[in-house]
Amino acid sequence: MNKNKARIKIIKDGAYCVFGAIPLKEKIITPVGAHYEYREGRELPQSENYSLCRCGQTKTPPFCDGYHQEIDFDGTETAARDSYEARAELLKGKEIDLMDDHRCAYLRFCHTEKGTTWNLIEESDKKEKKELAKKSAEECLAGRLTAVSKSGEILEKDFEPAVEVLQDPEKDCSSAIIVKGNIEIEAADGEIYETRNSVALCRCGKSENKPFCDCTHYHNGFKTDD
Image 1 (cartoon, rainbow, N blue to C red):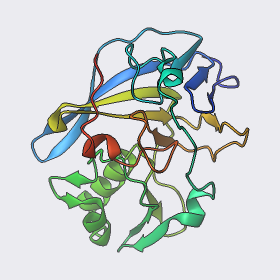
Image 2: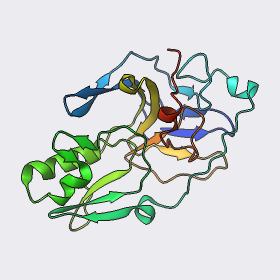
Image 3: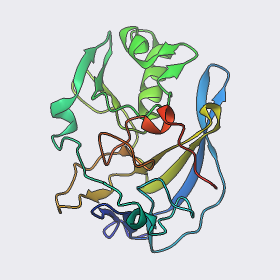
Image 4: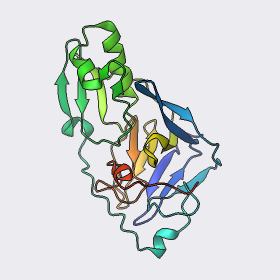
């Protein structure tokens, strides 16, 4: 993979076009006791360039088959384009803080066996809870939550570039497309979204915050015919 060429272009009322041989994986959201893990799913074909469905109606998931043209898919991008830092709230904890921009994809990794990420931040003077707060925020691949030090340092590892298609059998639905590793995402109008360590893109076609996931796949019971 050439990191300099890795990028995603959103086509107006069409697909996500992925360039630069970015690894494509399927991951399964898996409950393990009172927490969740990402488990490996089926192997997906790899390619230098590929197009992923954005309308939710493809017959060849996760890839686009052009069906968006048959249904006159409205893929208008409505998400705010301000920076994460500008829109995120800051929750102050005992030893570390938490940034939260409320862009939830219902991945549920903020729920742990020791409490929610927000609760853990408030008790971050306890080592175990501080480490779990950092871990659970990092595993929020929608990019909603970010643990930060009191000096403002971001407390998460840098992901390698990858595109991950999520399945959520516990909730009987197909989940978001995760884009990891600060991959450039270009809007249909040519503007570049802020690059992030991870974000969740909508693939059910119904998000009201396109191109980002807003949990609608769960509320509508979206499920691909894999």
